Image (cartoon, rainbow, N blue to C red; front, side, top):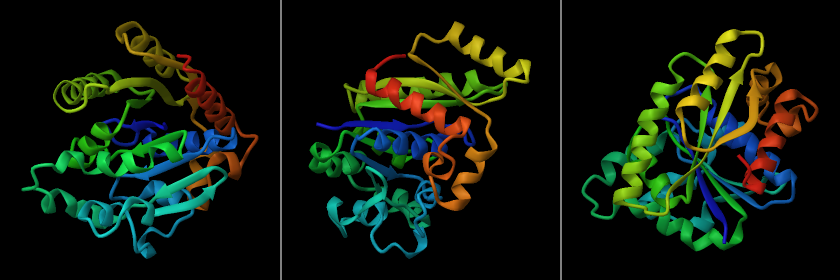
Length: 254
């Protein structure tokens, strides 16, 4: 049975989408079968795999409205070993459409349960807010992987997220756990980056990955070419970092 991992942080711009795309690609490169579900109406994960999100007929939105079953919305082999369920701006309307539905928090879980056995890992890129979409992702997941940008307010956003995860665990999904915390956009030239890492390590009891993802130009360029970093620049520092992170995820080391 596949492991379902949400990639989440209520703060925007912390590397959620970058981590989802490149960790999925690195896991696929290692022979794992991966499904990525883009749960952000901005659809940046879909674009990052070279998919024209606005031309897709079947997306997460159609899955939520019941117009499609999950196997009809899967785009196969967008990168070696990686399938994707796309998203676009239509998904923003789900909040209103499902408002009165009594089972609105379980829509994604019920769909994902049908295809769990087809994959080693199912990764869900969450929007940067606590919405019905994020709740659906967490209810469907076994764990949450938290990217943290090496910046001043990192710890503040993290404590809010941990509180949210604990609430979902308590009320809706008792198996939900924190997969691990990964530092992104690390700049070894600044004292701030190392201070943030040290501060988080001292104040957090959750698992923290040894891998630190550097601030890397090639990593920033890759989405505009619609390619994961493992394809766009396989030998870059960013590609190597996500390969190491993939090894940690597979081995369960933190």
